[in-house]
Length: 144
Image 1 (cartoon, rainbow, N blue to C red):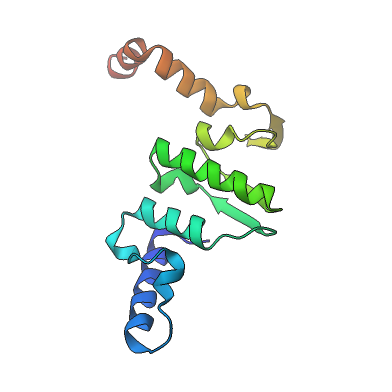
Image 2: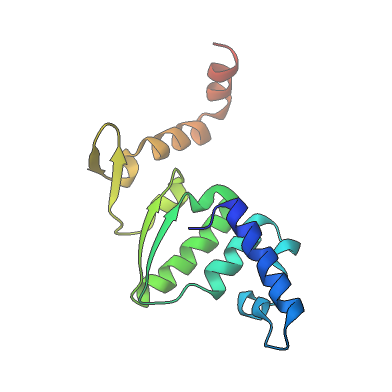
């Protein structure tokens, strides 16, 4: 798992190693662009696109934290490619976009694990209410 701080250190180490040797550049295996010259989200996508492989197990903790909604959809597309190549994912997320992956098993932790459907998740319900009733929700939030 790469937390933001750890990912920053990895990016720094890659640059240091690339400066030191006559070996092929490590950054080329991440898409060829310095991870420090990208936003955290773009660098994370570089990792996902260039380093994740099929027939693997990935455990991700809130991968959406660095990603815009459109980039979360890009992530879903890459996850789908990897699933078709035999990979499996265990993802802790609050993102209704990530949870929407077809045929995923969704468990909610509220004192105990319980299996839920996508539309029954609190995250889906809250987002749906907010998007469908933005003015009303803003009024409730800002004028208690």
